[in-house]
Amino acid sequence: MASLRQLEYLVTIVEEGSFTRAAELLHVSQPALSHQVRVLERDVGGPLLERLPRAVRLTAMGRAMLPHARAALADAERARCAARQAGGLETGELQVATLYSVSLGVLPPALRAWRRSHPGVRVRLFEHSHAEQLREAMLAGQADLAIGPAPRDWDGLVTPLGTEPFLVVLPADDPAGHREHGADGVQGADAVDLTALAGRDWVHFAPGNGLGEILDQACAAAGFQPRAAVRTEQTAAAPVLAAAGLGPTLVPANVIPPHFDGRVLWPRPPVERVMTAYTRGRPDPLAAAFIATLGRAACLVPAHVLAPR
Image (cartoon, rainbow, N blue to C red; front, top):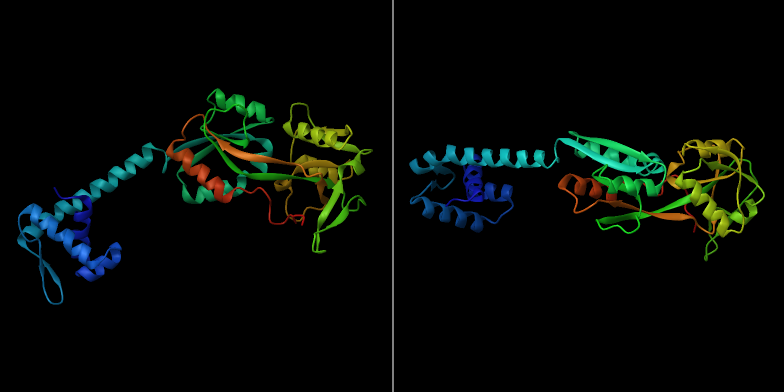
């Protein structure tokens, strides 16, 4: 029985008028192409092509077979498109659960890349203030996949995306911090020992916000409990308030916009979290494609933030 590949070879040879050009277009060797045509001819019981010195001509059998070959290839392409549509790879909706800070910093570059490659697929975001809320929402079936810190006791697939660092934000003229040097003596980025900020009032986060817990844990590791000058529910507001002089804050590096007018410093000791994409079981083709896009395009450390040496 003729295979789709053999029919594709026949159609391409006819359209190109040459075995040589067809082989180049199909990325196969000319002997392999000729062999498959001979196999097809044996299968149908006679010659399909007449090989002339400077051209290729269809025989009567070839002329009879050609429209059916083209129809079979068109049907195969329609079947492929239907399967992709059913799998959501060309149309449909992808449901993504994540954290507010992730949708602000990590996701935008990945969503931009996804939109270019899958323009017919809508993305619906479900945003949460805490990683544990995110985990519970995924267990309840809220979305196709989640993006956030690695969930505890998770039976499904967990794909690491990388490490997300945090930065301390202060007003532009704040004297805190120091210039770090590498082992080779070359200067790196500005850094600050968190203990040096122990006496400050901080721009903190509203109760239940996971970033507030990260701030509290980082300060506790440095030996103090931060006093809150103001608490905000919005991740994007924290660095703006800190730059305005209400107190230092601690936020993911990727939420700092380019040309930010505050001062950003790397905390010592470092503060960071591992970001992952996770699903309840094996991801469907659409979710798997989005996870692959995340791996390529997600922004964990923006280019405008100078890393320490």
